[in-house]
Length: 452
Ligand SMILES: *Cc1c(COP(=O)(O)O)cnc(C)c1O
Image (cartoon, rainbow, N blue to C red; front, side):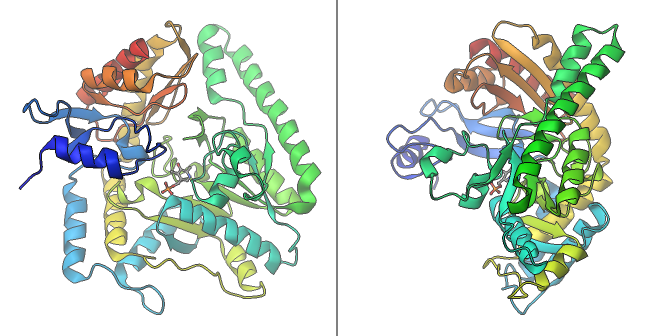
C-alpha cells in the first residue's frame, strides 16, 4: 500500500534532514515517484489526485546520472551481481567486480595512475588523497610538509579535511576556526568565460581577445607562484578541481592554469591532486581534465556509477605508492567497511563501458552546442551578469542572489528540474538528453532567470 503523498511529506518535514537545510525552517521538497531516461516524475500537486508530472532533470542528480535513469545496462549489471553476492569485506578478500573496475580505471585515466584505492564517497576519496599526500611527504623525509595549497572558489566535499580546502566562505571557515586544518589559499584562476565574453564583445578582433586572455593567465600565474614560494617549506601538495570549479561557483578556467599547477608542484616537491569528482567521465568535453596534464593523485566519484550508488576512487602513481610505503607505518591507514562494494563496482564498470561504447564525446558536444546556442541569448538580459558553458554544463550568473523557490517553480512550470544556488542558475543534464529535452532545459532556465 502506498501512503498518501501528504503523509509522506509531513513526516519528511518533521524528521528528515535534507542537504544544507535547517530543521526549523525546512525548504520545500518535491516527492519523486519515478525516473526514466532524462526525466524525473514529481508529484507537484499533492492532494490534487493529478499524479506525477514528468520533468527533464537539468541536474543529473548532482553530476552523477550521465546516462539518465533506468539504464538497462546498469540495471542488468546490478541484478547479475546481486545474484552472485552483494557485499563482502575487502580486508583479506578480493573479487572480480573490484578488480575489473580497477582495470578499467587504470585504462581510461592518464598513463602512470596505476594504483587504485576504492572509497565509498567523493568526500572520503578526498580525505584519502590528502592522507596519501601527507604520508608521502613523511615517507620521503619531509614530515614538516603538512599544508595543502589550493585556490579560492573550490569545493571538495563536506567532511572536515574537505572543508579545509573548500572556499573559505563556502566552507564557512570562520565558524570552524581552530578545528579545521589551516590550508594555504591562492587566487582563483581567471575565468575561461572572460575570454569568450571578450571574444563576443569584439568578434572582429580575435588577436586582441587572445592577448587579453594570455595576460589574465600570466597575472594569475605570478600571484599563484608568489603564494607557493612563500609557503613552500610547509606545503605538502596542491589540490584543485581541474578546468571547472563546480559547487564552489561553477567557474570554468583555462587549460594553461593546469600546466602552472604541474610546474609549481614539481618545482617545490609537492604532489598534485586533481579532484575530478565533478569533472570526470566527460562532463567538461574531455574524458578527464587530467588528459591536459597528469596529476600525482586523482579523485573520481559522482558519475563513476552513472548515478546509481555512492562510489569513488583515488588513483595514484607507483612513485607515490612507494613513498607512502616508505613512511613509518608503511601502510595506508584507511579501510572503509564498504570498500570495493561489489554492487557499486559492477555498476561502475558497466557505466564506463556504456560511456565509451555510446560515443560520449559526440553526446557531450551536442549538449554543449545546444546549451551554448540556447543560453547565449540571455547574455545582456535584465539581471544577468554572465553566461558560460563548458562541455555539458551551462551556467547563467545573475547580478544578485537567486530566489531559489521562485526560480525552481518557474523552471518546473516549463517542465525542468533545477537547483540554483547563490547567484547561479545552472544545468548539467544527462548526456542522453534529447534535443527536445535540451530545448526544455533552455526554456526552463530562461523562465527561471525571468522569475528569479
Ligand atoms: C561532490 C564533490 C565532492 C564530494 O563528493 P561526495 O560524494 O558528495 O562526498 C568532492 N569534490 C568535488 C569536486 C565534488 O563535486
